[in-house]
Image 1 (cartoon, one colour):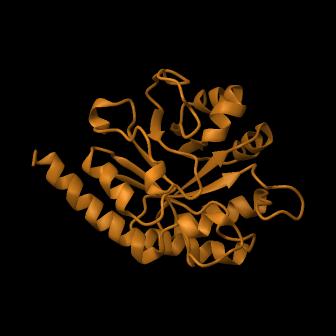
Image 2 (cartoon, rainbow, N blue to C red):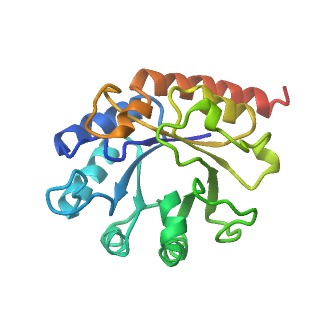
Image 3 (cartoon, rainbow, N blue to C red):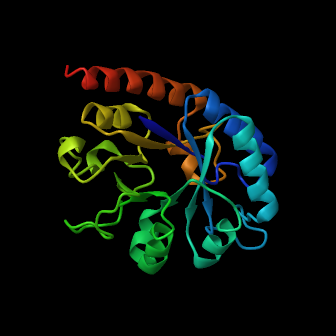
Length: 228
């Protein structure tokens, strides 16, 4: 199982929170701490990340023994990311639709690339099948409410999706995905769900919730591997 803690912009533009967010993601059992590069990133905006901030994120992740990963939103963001050594990347749903050539350039780097298909409504996959692509089922609603979930895979083992990128409230839907065979779970992560700085806090998991997700999810996965 791979658990991705989507920190995203839940640092609220305060780089002083990065260390604690990464620390808590690691302690909660996440394998990857994910951020966004190239989204709301203009001067004075909440997610203005440059080389100094990326270096900070990398150092925090190294210190807490968790893999750093970025969603690459723009061509400029890719140029910036290429100044560093990363083992994996994320392609967000909006990038699949709005910037397919950028997505192909990211995939072409040969790194493991998670691709969310929250806005993709075609049966065929947008970039075919390559060894370094892992497609994630997703719905781009913030938050995703239970009655809005359509076409959720009955079994991930018989679909083209390796895992699930979640925008729901709580951890029950990600756990349901694991029972159906998902091997990758991406869940937004926050220190305070009541924070109203950005909408993502409300649909994020707190450290205790994420820890429960990992603990229960791994137990489910172990039972599934036994054929139960």
